[in-house]
Amino acid sequence: MKQMSENAIITAASVIGAGLVCLGAAAGAGIGNGNMCGKSIESMARQPEEAGKIFINMLVCVGLIESMPILCYVIAIVLVFANPFIK
Image (cartoon, rainbow, N blue to C red):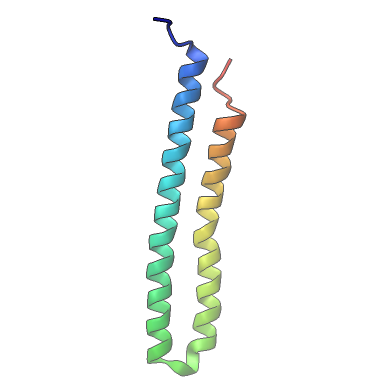
């Protein structure tokens, strides 16, 4: 049986790591967005006169929450396609 080369092992570990990073980022953003949107809707139902301000703040927070998975996806793509660990 042939031995796997060092580059093949690093590439396989990078692909697995990138998949786990994407999974964690998507799950975290989904949970965060769900909690934040639910609380915002609760707040709008309790204070309808402030619904406009709450909605704008909610959209800003959604953008901030979604920025982390985007950064994680970029790092995952770099690890898969332009791996700095491969000699």
